[in-house]
Length: 84
Image (tube, rainbow, N blue to C red; front, top):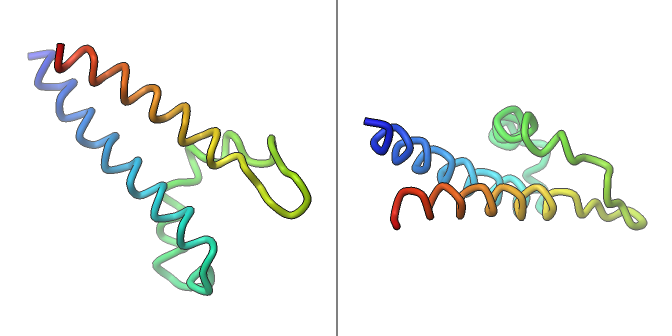
């Protein structure tokens, strides 16, 4: 039972990871002012907002990279538990 819960949690977290990547890529485009981007921001900001402003060099904010790396580490740990 716990394996099934972990599996569906893993799938949800993996989808959230790709949503974060989409959000970051779209932040480099003119779509930043679109409704779709604001929806993505509402979904992604609870996690990435934790890291906001930690690694800013000039006008570039590298904190999403830190957030994604930590998130990927969490996914790898869950993956090891599930698929070993």
